[in-house]
Image 1 (cartoon, one colour):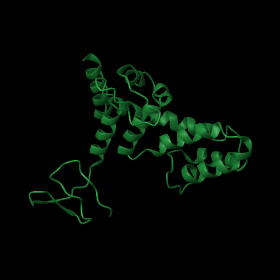
Image 2 (image 1 turned 60 degrees about the horizontal axis):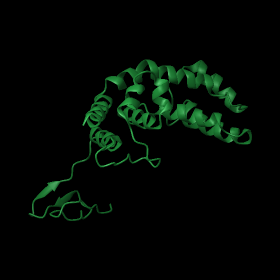
Image 3 (image 1 turned 180 degrees about the vertical axis):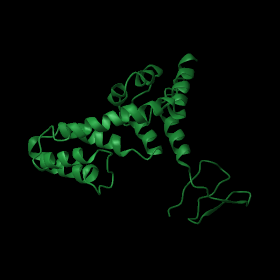
Image 4 (image 1 turned 90 degrees about the vertical axis):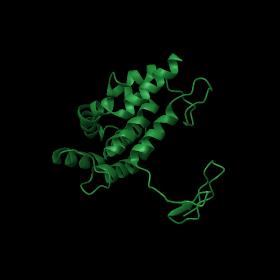
Length: 199
């Protein structure tokens, strides 16, 4: 395991073992990060620090506003229309062990933009990754939809996954999306943005 550096003068580089030494000679067991802490840190990185002008860690230098985050609560469509919304919602779905839903939805959106001569390869990949009965990221669709989608994927068109995508979208809209809007992750992000804006 490679060493890590901490931005504190009294800490030394980890030596790769499960214990790390502090400058005072104390030994503390290295604790595994909980997912909640990872999500919290991710959301903190999404909050713009207006006073110092720091932008989000996104490569597109997108700054989140309270107004944009409020719009996410209007509909799942508005949430998914936002790149930042997709990322935050995906992190939430990871915490519920259902990120395959948004990954499939995004893969379908990308598939629709694919040039016709590349459809077959992409259709096969989407089918193997999300649709087939032993897929690693199997989506929650019924047997009939799985069979119908399998047939369409064998002779792919730009609409081959539309029905399955709609079923997954409806599942997220009914199930995960309302929980996301009530989650601490969303409410804390909104609260931090509103607090920053009112300063």
